[in-house]
Length: 129
Image (tube, rainbow, N blue to C red; front, side, top):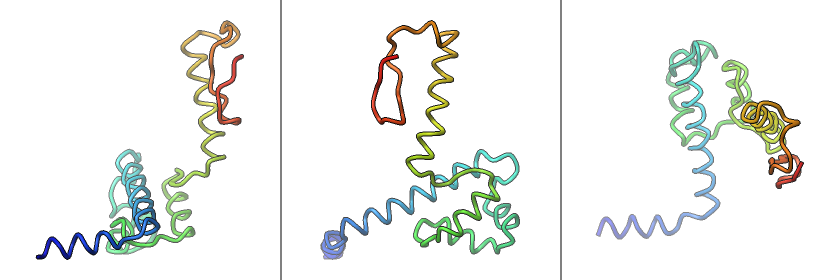
């Protein structure tokens, strides 16, 4: 009986609610990744200290269920020195440079590449050079 109630309730969850929860969990995962790889702020306690917050508040934020405001996310980005959320345009600008650098590294120098398919991130598709 209990599992039937659970299944019924689960079926009632809207796709919008599912997307909201998935997005919150992705943000939580990104913050945890940044903390794990940060040079000095590696724990929730260290983040709390750097943000002048109580550790319990950081724990609530990183539960994945809390609705973080844009302002809070930006404050975390400033303290951590890294973006937590990137717009599509920001990602395209950042990663276009990375793709070109990798091509240059792999081939020695860019001018030697003839008709190589390179990703033109600004147009969203592939373009021959």
